[in-house]
Amino acid sequence: MSGGGRKAVLEFDFFDDEQREWLRAVSEAPDVWSGFEHSLRATTGASAQDDLLDLVRALYRSHDAAALSGLHAVAELLIDHDENLALWRYQHLLMAGRQIGRRPGTGGSEGMAFLDTTLNQRLYPVLWEVRSVL
Image 1 (cartoon, helix red, strand yellow):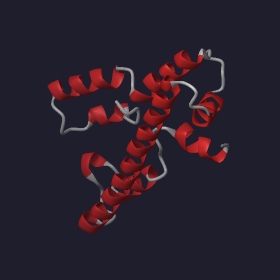
Image 2: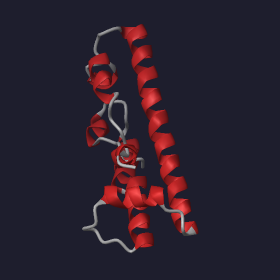
Image 3: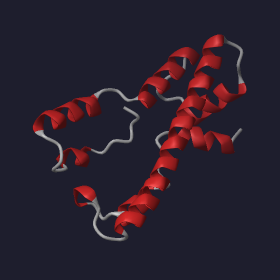
Image 4: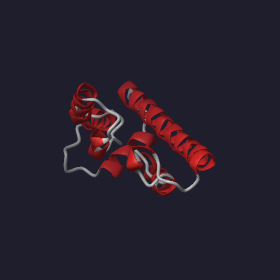
């Protein structure tokens, strides 16, 4: 739903067939980011060829219309969500290190080595990048 899911997770042993099918269906539904991007392009009259970073930068600079202000508020809520996920990932890494150290993790993952790779992942990188060009 947030757009950060990985299909490989569906193969983890702790899901039964019904859960796996539900997760597969959810993973194939449009995610939050594609809905935001569609709304931004539709509201501004932009085409698929218009640069997304330029559109988001314009969104942050202009509040001429209520729809644009609303989309700006949604963008900030998406950043909040992304930031909270990053904080959770870090806390999860610390907890895993405290509990199992560098042993293999659940689902056959590499444990902390895998969790280390997730710390800099962002669901909505354009919303982070726009801060550098405002």
